[in-house]
Image (cartoon, rainbow, N blue to C red; front, side, top):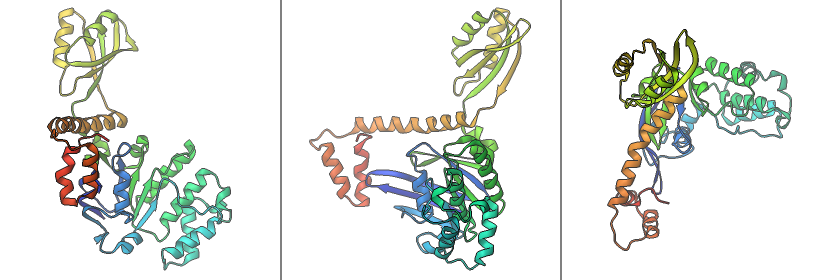
Length: 358
């Protein structure tokens, strides 16, 4: 349904989206994650035809966004973080306005009634939008995205500011929409992605750093291993041994206890398997290891691990660029001025010398 090939978006010397490619199948619910400034909004704005790309190709249902932007927009329902509502209109007036704007050909009354039933706004259909709660305004925003029955729905932070009950209702609604639509969900609330998405895309510094099924996302954070252990022995001494081992990054005591055995949470250093070494060390001390259980990583842990792994090489490269910078009389102001005046081809030659300084 959606295909993005080698997409690039530059703002002067700043590369917001750096040669990304991915596909989303019909009927998939995909979580699109990334830290602030990672390129999520830029990618979605290009996908919806709001921004043009510097390079690359974007197609929706086989239609190129640049070749026929209006036809692509007919196939997309979009809810930005701030719902595009006219507060002086009633819900009915607003949805009729959106219906006419999209040039829909369905029976208007029946179509809008069906949408109101799906998003549960029948009770406020004749009320002025200004007088609605945050939750109902969000529902009206979702309703406008559904007008015209587009095959692709894009939600940008759909549950911001909602109470827990409203959040659960919106999550259930997104799951329901996923049965008949392709859904992209961009959010910072990771539990939300875990609850409703089939697949997770993580973008950082303009590049895709993870693309996995939700249940397999832990594989993308290679090298991080956590365990809960039950060890017989004096707690203080055992904890001291764990914290001083070269293959263990973190250890803490847990309140769990089984006879003379105490519980511990242990995290191995990235890329290291500490289990055999730990067993030998405890055996030498005469402290039996009676339990060792691998712990699953939370989505928050996976997200932080993936973003940190992706950021490390970039930081190292930036340092190298600064060391390699020519020592002539050209000032940072001169470089910045030349970048602004340069053609796209010239930018590629100049940009490496700018490092990561303002």
